Length: 380
Ligand SMILES: Cc1ncc(COP(=O)(O)O)c(C=O)c1O
Image (cartoon, rainbow, N blue to C red; front, side, top):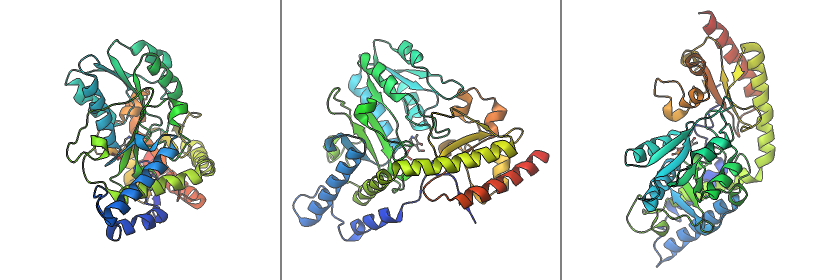
C-alpha cells in the first residue's frame, strides 16, 4: 500500500539494469586495469562500451567521460580541480543560491581558501536572470556553475544563454545535470556545457556510480585530480573501476533514452492531475516556474500546515519536505527561501517527484490520502 513519490531522492534499480550488472560481480569480475588476461580485457571492454553509451546520450565523445563514485564526487572534482588549475590568476566562480549542497558546500570550502564566489539570486519562479550573470564577471572568473534542473522544484535554468555569456568571458560552463539526465534531452554542444556531473541512481541505475563529462576541445577542460593512485581515468580519478556499477549506469541511460519523450509526457499528465487536485481541494500553491520545469516534479506549499507534521501522519506516502540531503536539518529549504517564500510557506512545502513506476491509481489514491491528512492537520 506504500506509494513512492520521492524519485528525485533516488530511484529503484530497473530490473533490466540489474540483469545486465549481475554477471559483472562473479563471472566477468576482472579488474578493468588488468591488461594481461581475459578477465581484465572483458572488464575493460565493458567499461569502454558503457563510456560510449553515456557519451552518446549527451552528444559527447567517449574520451570526455570520467567515471566517479557519484555526482557529489564529480562536483568536488570539477570545482576543486578547476580552482587548482586556474590558481592564482583565476580566483572567481559564479554560481546560484539554489544549487545543490554538493555545489554550495564545495564553493564554501573554496571560498575559505581564497576563491571568491558569487551566489546569484533567483526570482520568484526560481529562475536566474541572465543580466545578473553578465554583471557578475570579474577578470578572475574562470567558471560559471548553474544547475540544469533543480532537485526540489524541477525548475529548468536557461543554460544555453548562460553558457554563451560564460564563453564570451572565456569562462568554463559547468551544469549539474543530475536531475535532468534521462528526463529531458541533453546535448553538450547544443547547450554549451563544458563540465557536466551525472549520477546513476537518479535514473534507475545503481548507487555509488556517477560520471563527469569534461569537454576536450573549444575549450579544453583540464582539472587537477582529487584522488591520486594508480592513474585510472587518465589520472583524473584513481581507483579500481566499479565495473558492475558502470555497466549498470550505461544500461540505465540507454533505457531512459528509448522512452524519453513518451515518459516525459506520461509523467506530466500524472503530475498535473495530482497538482490540480491538491490545488483545488487542498489550496496548494505551486513553487517555481510552471512552464520551465521537469514534468515529474511538483513543489507545493500548503497554507497553515507544517510539512513535517503532515508527513508524520502519512507514513504510507514517500514524499520529501525539501531536498533529501538537507531533510535531516531543521531549517527551511534554502531553495524556497532564495525564491522569496516566507519561512511559513517554506516549512509548509512538499516535494512530489514521480517516476517510472508511478501509476494513475497511485495518483488517485495518494491524492485522497494526502487530502485527508491535510484536512485533519489543518483543523488540529
Ligand atoms: C541536483 C543534484 N546534484 C547532486 C546530487 C548528488 O548526487 P550523488 O547522490 O550521486 O552524490 C544530487 C543528489 O541528491 C542532486 O539532486
